[in-house]
Amino acid sequence: MAITYTIIFDVLPAAHDRFLALLTDVLDAMRAEPMFHQAILHRDPSSPYRYMLYETWENHQDVLEVQLQRPYRAAWHDALPDLLACDRDISIWEPFRQDRQVHVR
Image 1 (cartoon, rainbow, N blue to C red):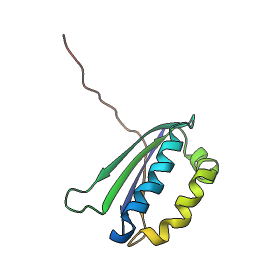
Image 2 (cartoon, rainbow, N blue to C red):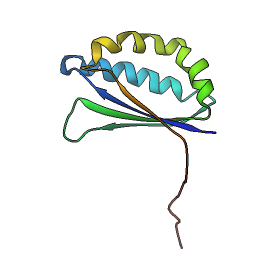
Image 3 (cartoon, rainbow, N blue to C red):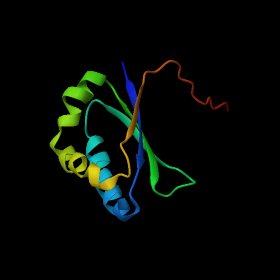
Image 4 (cartoon, helix red, strand yellow):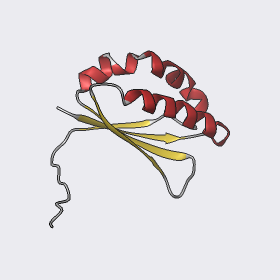
């Protein structure tokens, strides 16, 4: 079953460019993963240094045992303590209902 993570980042202003560069590298690499569904990076309109990452994968165990161990994530994970003003807020969500817009012709 697919699983979605929401991750809130409060980025240190001085580390903002490095945060975005490292995260861009990770997001670009994730696209090639077969268990990956989607990721959407949001920015808080009231704070240019607060972000929410919405990330969906096929399987939670795969994320824990495989994806988090990928070499392309090492620089990102190692840098996080220097990039963030506080710990990340990570939430895990399972699908309950999905609706899509219906286009009528």
